[in-house]
Amino acid sequence: MSADTTFDERTYKSGLRREWREAAPGWQRWMEVLEADEAMPRIGRRLLQAIRPGPGDHVLDVGTGYGEPGLTAARAVAPGGRVTLQDLSGEMLALARDRAASTDLDDVAIEFVECDADELTLAEGQLDAVMSRSVLMYLADPAQSLAQLRASLRPGGRMAASTWSSPHEVAMAAPVPVIRRLLDLPPPPADRPGLFALADPEQLREVVTAAGFDQVELDSVTAVFEFDSPAEATSFLRDCAPPVTGLVDDQSEEVREGVWRRVTDEAWEPFCGDDGRVRLPNVAHVVTALNPG
Image (cartoon, helix red, strand yellow):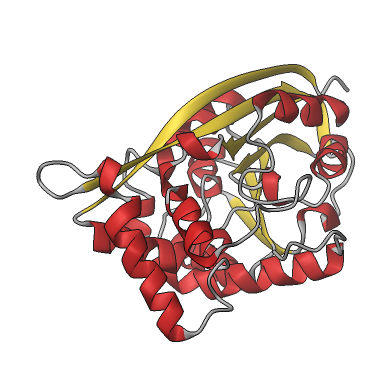
């Protein structure tokens, strides 16, 4: 996102949709890294523990991407349950469809919805649980969107969501200061949606409370991405992290490649083991709450 002092929500959403459309092939290519047991599933398991889905439940996964943790929830709501998988990117939802088709989920109704999170149309009280993994910080107005989602929850329905912690606790963001220094980029505007927009756990609590939820609790979990080398870590980032790659997209090819070489040489050094492998720990905040009804 540019450093303009104004924020155009329509332009922002259009750019976000484009970024994740372009990133979808990379997420498919790196699925084994993303879904390694210590990586994103760690966050997904924590969300599922919080919402406690059971047979016959209707669960909504907001910003499902390639279908997680929604498809894992689908196994828990069988038989007779329903899972709604929402994402703004049709290309990411296509990955979710492919994964669902390769899984034995015939006794669960799975619905795929392509739209912005604040455009979901759900009947009041139709959901038993809502969850969202690493998405809330990208919403233009997370409190408003959460309030709309809360209205779709039955009384006592559960909500669980994760956001990334501050940059110093998220190793996959280590290239950002390197890139900003090399390109002499200004800091991002405050109070804008983005990767670290809800990095402050108390701000996250305030957003959920403002949406009308009750019994708001905070926790954290660490997802670890592992790579054979610094070069592989950089390739992953270039394929899968639009918020970071967007910082260099406007540069010439020569400048871009030079920046990525410096990222490979500098950014991952603190996370390299003696064997040359790169291990990136990323702390996520987890917020859980109930709909008071």
